[in-house]
Amino acid sequence: MSLIAEDKGIVLEVTGDAKILGGRLLVQRAITNLVSNAVRHAATNSKVTLAIAAEGPNVTLAVTNLGESPRPIWSGSLIAFTALIPAVRAPVGGTGLGLAIVRSIMLSHGGQVRVRSQKDGKTPFTLVFRL
Picture 1: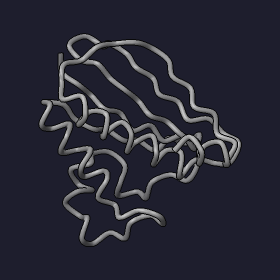
Picture 2: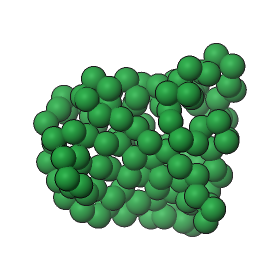
Picture 3: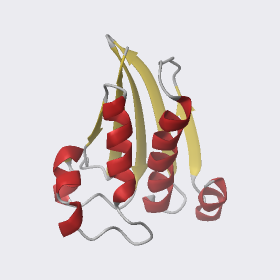
Picture 4: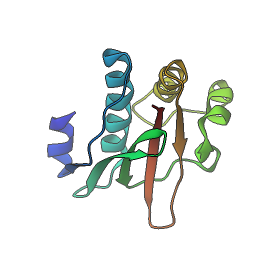
């Protein structure tokens, strides 16, 4: 993943700090999936940020890129996305199942996944972990 980022001139930036309880390998898989998607769909010579924050009873990790926005049906809840997987063509270079796996991992940890396309071209995918 870092080679792809380097080839595209993408800078990875991590801010914040927090701790969660959870299955290390599963959580790592969810984060890796989101970061690799963000890098894959980021504009050349842009930045992908990972912002970690403790917010009340939650810890959030927002992975944000600047680039091609998800299709309109992707915005909002990933529940709608995963229900439509058979009807939606995956973006080039993926099967589209990665986000369903991320959602499954987050649900197994009592958390959730949020996504919003913003007018500035940034797309944050946010993992929300309950403390």
